[in-house]
Length: 165
Image 1 (tube, rainbow, N blue to C red):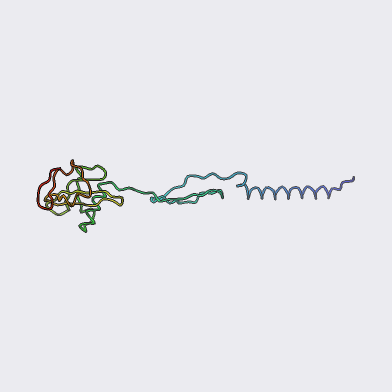
Image 2 (image 1 turned 180 degrees about the vertical axis):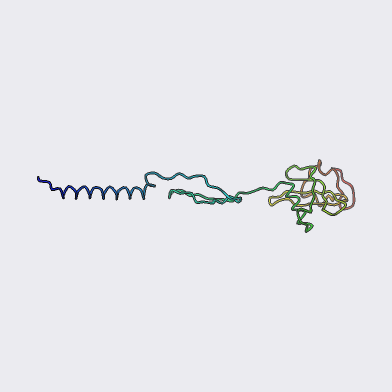
């Protein structure tokens, strides 16, 4: 079979076009053969990603905000601020006893000369102030919260009788 120089060039040009097309196709769709791996991304203070990582179609990524828990002291201060309509920075709390559910201690407000004692209880939504002041502890008020005797050694019943715990 006789070969012409023009035919040889024709086949070579065709081969190079086919090679370039294959390289373009593979380059464009290389993720099928070489999937990208997720790279760490910076996160904001609330835990949201600042860039979108490459996802393989079968993957699902769920971003959730970072939850910052308040300290017990901050929770008690917040409860006092709410109860007495004060700013949190005006509330000065000293916790003397805390078992994680019950707390007792002292309370003062900025600009006031005297303070008092408090009993607080932590429920699933946060701390509540059960009782506070300068007087006696009411047995009926604290009864539903089951304060330990190490925090409340005595209280006064509805008839004014002193009850030792």
